[in-house]
Amino acid sequence: MDIIEWFIAPLQYEFMLKAILVSALVGIVCSALSCYMTLKGWALMGDAVSHAVMPGVVIAYILNIPLAVGAFVFGVGSVIAIGFVKEKTRVKEDTVIGLVFTGFFALGLVLVSKVKSSIDLTHILFGNVLGISDGDIIQTVIIAVITLGTLAILRKDLILFCFDSTHARSIGLNITFLYYVLLSLLSLTAVAGLQTVGIILVVAMLVTPGATAYLLSDNFDHMMLIAMASGVFSSVMGTYISYHIDGSTGGCIVVLQTLLFVVAMIFAPKHGMIARSRNSHVDR
Image (cartoon, rainbow, N blue to C red; front, side, top):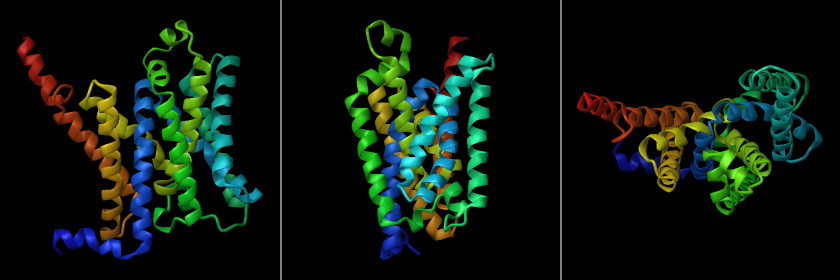
């Protein structure tokens, strides 16, 4: 099979066209948000929210309302629970995050095991972009518009909040508002990622592109562009590869993202391992 046929063959099927387009869109949204998550150091928070949405998805299915509504409510609810436990106890934040997200995730597993429905646990955990419905596509597009629009409107405020929240407060920004805006967008984006890579792997899409770009650029605008490019590339190519090897789409996407990070970690011109090693020898 030549390279042209390799790319064209999957496009003969409507489900593959949908999967490629949706994966690319989710890649853009997750990558854009991942830059803020990286600057803020919220990798563990992203893990918590992405897992905490699971019971919300099941309850939304039971109530016959959009899954995004249930996931959003539980995503924000998990953050409120983390803040409450942290404030009322002496337990450190990372421990509280671990307690809350595993508790919510376990509740989701119990609900899935007890509710008789067409919900497939593996699809919730690992995504099912190849079988995505038109309704889910519309939902993903709406989430993408809301997330990217909000990031664009509040761009400067959010950047300052992520870089230095103390300075942001000192110049009059409402950092509590920005805190919950960012976490609300995180909850929404977790829903979008759920369709492609599932709850377990969505944290990788919310962290890896931003981390990769952070190694390659010190300029936030450039970082954002690099993150989006790597997110779209890994999402589209991961979908193609999963088709040809008949493997997990979400798994292929995340493996590609991880490989891109490893390449950046080694070869980044300024912050890569080779460059840092060369600079250390020069300093000596």
